[in-house]
Structure formats: C-alpha cells, structure tokens
Image 1 (cartoon, rainbow, N blue to C red):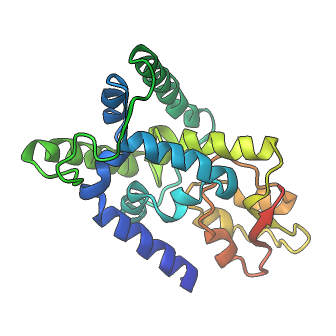
Image 2: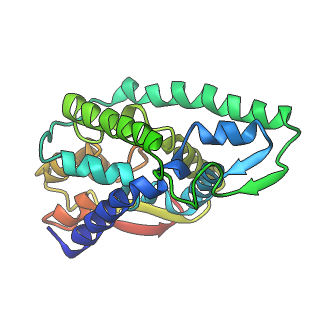
Image 3: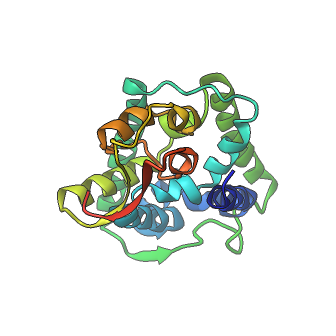
Length: 243
C-alpha cells in the first residue's frame, strides 16, 4: 500500500470514529425538520458545501473524508466482492429526488430560509449525546453492514447514499460549464491491460476499460487514486484542469 493510500484510509477511519459526533450533520431527516421551520440545519449546510466542493474536486470527499466510506472500506476485509452497478446505481436517485422535493416544498411553505442553525437539534453540537440517538446511529451502521456483506464493496454508496447525488450533480455542472476540476486521467498507450486497477477499485468500476480509452467520466468514481497507485506502468494519474 502506498503512502497516499495509507493517508487516505487513515482519514477515512478517523472520520468513521467521529461519526457518532457528526452523524446528524449528514441527516436526511433533520434537514426536513429544519426546513419545515425555515431553518437551514447542519445537514443543509454540509450538503450545500458538498455540492459546491464537487464542482472543483468531484467526489473527492467520498474517497477521502466520508465516515460511511471508512466503515465500508473496513468491511471489505469481510467481503471484497464487487458490487453490481449499472441500473442498480439509479436506486439512490429514486430516493434522492422525492426527498429533495420535500425539502424544497418545506422551505417554500415556511417562507424560505429565516435562520441558520448548524447545531439544530443536537446537544452542544454532539449528535449521539442521548440514549435515543444510539438507535438512529446503530440503525445506519446496521444498514451499511448488511449492504456491504450482502451486495459487495461500497454497496451503500452505490444504492442508498443520499449525499452522493449532490456531488454527482456538482461534478456534472462543473463539466458542463467547463470549470477546471480534479479528475483522473490516463495514457492509454501505456496500458498493458493487466486488470489490477479494476480488481482494486473500491467502487467496482471497469477501470481497465477507462484507462485504455482515456475516458474517466464515470459518476461513480470517487477519486480515491487506488488505480493510479497500483498501476505498474503509471498509466493513470490525477489531473486538475478541464475534463
């Protein structure tokens, strides 16, 4: 494992250890509760920042700073099976779209954003500060564990995650506006089709095909750099610029 991957995985583990403190800042429920009262809760701010950040850095947050990603990469020790993608990846959008519509409706009904409260409905800013909060916390953990063990690596990211669509939307917007951004690139002429990049990809993507063609425009790529670090010919690498 390279130094970069050691740092990346250490960051993911640290974020997962902080999850009991920060879980409500990723809450799909509190954002609705806040919106119904015209309050921009912590999760509203976090999701908004994820969208803006992704315009310039894609899904870098997923690969390096996501607490649920930290747990899922730990669970790869129990199940390294690739998760099936394709049309199944659309499940999260069928969850996200109506949920986002409800948030917008609640804000409209409340007359817009009247207040910003980052620690809305948290005790001194700590999410799991009361016994009842553990039910929510362990419910999320159980969902992630079940999906990872049953469907393969990072299955939660593929099928359920309500945060990734914000970053996918930001990435696509940046591409449409031709804004320079972080992305993966490759020199297909160097590729020897060894398949190591595909084998190690935590998102179960056909990286070998992308590396050969030089086209890394895949909304499920989390810019983890695993493919770049394992490539024996250094075919793949990071780049910042127009995609």
